[in-house]
Image 1: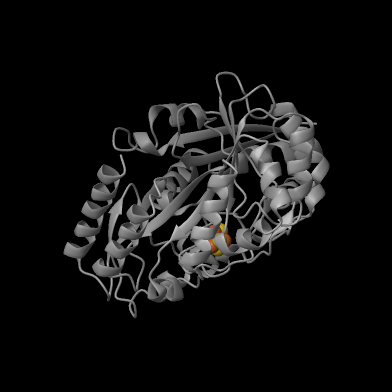
Image 2: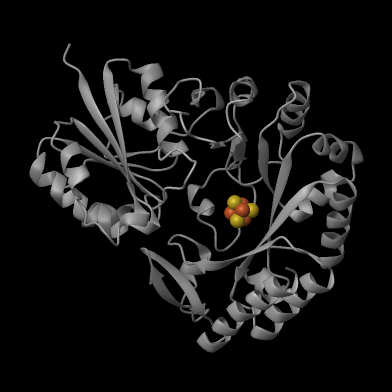
Amino acid sequence: METVNLLLLTFDFHQRDKSTKSLAIANIEASINNNLPGIHVDTYSVDMNQLNRIKVPCDDLKKVLSKHYDYIALGLYAWCKSEVNELIDYIRVKQPKCSIILGGYEVNKSTIDQLQLKYANKVNHYIIGYAEKAMVELLSGKTNDEVINAPLETFEVPPVYQSNVIDLKGITNVRLETKRGCPFQCAFCAYNSLDHKAFSLNIQTIISELEFLNGKVEKVNIIDPIFTIDNYQDIINHLIAINFKPLLTLQVEFNQFGIIMENLDFLSKLAKLNVLLEFGFQSSSQSALKNSNRKMDLPSVLKTLALLKQYDIDYELSVIRGLPGETLKTYREMIDFFIYHQIKNVEFYPLTLLSNTPFHKDKLALKLETYTHQGMDYVNKTKTYTKKDYIAMKKYETYYKNTLK
Ligand code: SF4
């Protein structure tokens, strides 16, 4: 039987010490290898950091695309929409018989009609949601639908590191997931568009992957939107049992973590590991929080941080600059709160306006204005602050950094 050739092609921001292959692509590749050994899979990731120096398709990519492929799957994300657009035209000319598959966050129920119109006669298949099972069904001939939506079940997500689809040579930092989806619905977050509730991956797979990584890498970034759901206790217990050495970064949510933390036994377990807890603080303005569909109260935050200090557990807070409802005054008050309480580990991020989010839909009502950088739209003006205020917010962040240095 003739081999079927598949290329998985993505645009990613490459980072030093990390694999250039994303976990999402590695999961798809491992799923296909496990289920369909007759398919030959190639992967290629274009470094978005290089895009100001190269033009799509760059020479390397032209070389990759000079090989014949039966299928080329492209990841459509907010940051690479125009590049994917150009690439689809290029592939259609160079490989007219190849089936083009489009997946990624930007392919979802609210964009599908638009995409089908835009790419009529160019794209053959669209995958909505997680792609592992959908790709296997398509490549095995189980489906030939134009739009494929194949929800996953836990056992179908393979152990990527033990499957050797990510080469660990020279890699010190890796990503791993223990669950997918998020029970929250923040108005700025694209996770909403996946329309999936949180579900845990197979605990045996997670544990064997962590055992495999122990001693091989320096840092494991658990990319679950919220780690402290469902299987987290079993994972932590197991990591202690195997004397897990790498730094483990875990994303947690203040309110939910506050409840868990009341069980001090959990904190003492975390203290036995090398962990960094990453809290999405986002804002202290009640108006901004309400618009963002989030809840948070400062006394509970202080209580949590005091306990983390007592147990010597490292943490980091992230703030989103300029959520709708924020004003220059509330932003400065928040930063003054950090300074007053000597909260040093705060990172500030711009607000990205992602399609298919409530903020995107309410763009006009909230009077959001944006600027574009590396293909992403960032908000720098809303009904509650001006562009000048936005610049002043950034300056106040520098003041915070200099004060707590
Ligand atoms: S921002 Fe985090 S907590 Fe909110 S919906 Fe997205 S993943 Fe969930």
